[in-house]
Length: 243
Image (tube, one colour):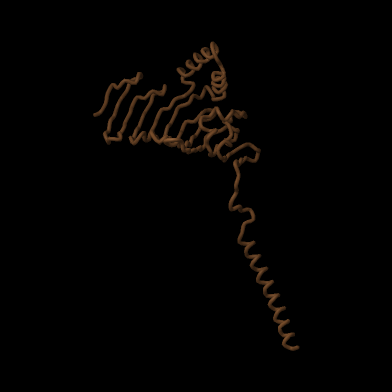
């Protein structure tokens, strides 16, 4: 009988000790872990907003990026090349305007592939002015930095409706809009790329362009490792070169 009582007493002590140890372990785990931390989150799109509820950042998988946004209006995805088939992130300023982003894609196709990465920064109320881009279709590849000039007196909100109308027009109306857009282009309302620094098909290149976007200086080291410097006129003719 004494043995039974002694064993019961030991069992009670063991039970109390086990409970204390288990409780201490749970408290330690709780203290060491942050209840706000999520190790893995699976979703198709994440919208980050400012305190006023306006979009600040969107992260999304393929097909879920927002359309271009300007002056409180969101335009269709199709108005921004490549956005319908890409994943990435888009940034917005305090006014709710899109100000740049990162998009990327890569797909295999018969006989090759198509890959692209595009990181851009937009001018105020305008289109992109700084772009880091990689393009590769298996036959041709380029990667580099492009810097553009954009007008300050002709915001993108004036240009988008005209381009949308041109896409939808036919016949005489299409011809009229062709002429109107052509005149705006000559006036510099579209802006133009001014600098490219990067590689093209295994060659290194620095290209400087005039206000109309026409190349005027081209410094290159080709795939054959031959260095060249060309100066061009407004019609693209080489007027001087070295060597």
